[in-house]
Length: 394
Image (cartoon, rainbow, N blue to C red):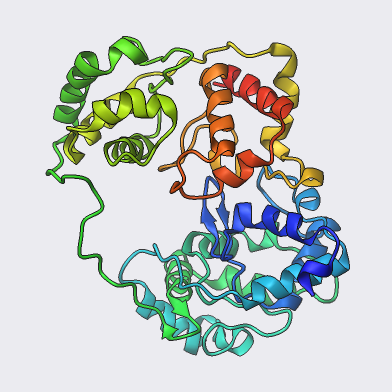
């Protein structure tokens, strides 16, 4: 059914940019929910709620535009995501799932909380308009339960708000987090999913971390001796070398590892950073990141001021008509980034423009989505507008 519906492939790619190729969800600035194995009727119900503005949202994205798909296209997309079933992404705090399982399966009669399985099924699989919760991302479930009254007050007869609002309000903070941790762990294919312990640590030649104050001093020394010539004495960068001041520390560490392993492969990276990062170990990367993230960033302000408003709108709203997702979903309302998602605010127009073009051209082939797909949909004027806006952002 899917590929025969006009606009299906383009709209599916649009959905995947936020929800993941396998519908597994994504941890950007805003947590994007898992759609894999979701009930089709529930997806269609929510699409309708967004488009009619009956599902209120507290985020900066205009959801009624982003989710505007006709009935036939909506059914095709819902059927596609219903067939997917990747393992849960995980990431919930350890030790909460057992308590959450008891509430999910048995409720809490002392506090008038019914068992979740009554509506959502014994494995959280859902049915009809009642959503599947199996494998749903922990922070998304926590947020939705905490904010049900303001975000999920959907005012038409097919909605379940009348049932869910009082239940969610009855859950304590600890109970909310426990239930979210449990559903985060469910994988319908094999019952409860247990992540395998990693045998190798996720770092490159690993060294024990230093105390923060000591790391700050050593990081500044390392930067001055090795990085300042290209990135500037205050780490504010130039047109070709990006500003590193105020950057997210996890992003800095991940990129240094990528240079060290020669995975980030655009031309200037190969020419300069591969050699510079070759002797790095994880401790050195962490020390550099600690120092650089502590330096106050200053915006480059080198873009075209006449394009700033167009770039701001594209950043905040995307272009649903062209299936371009809003950058704010991952990078945040002020382009500040989070975790290993980079801060974009204030980077040089010339650097940003070049990087967006390189993403579209296929550099960094093993980089995690959605950037290659998103950048590939941008036109040259859109890239210029985005880069201009971000160069002035603070």
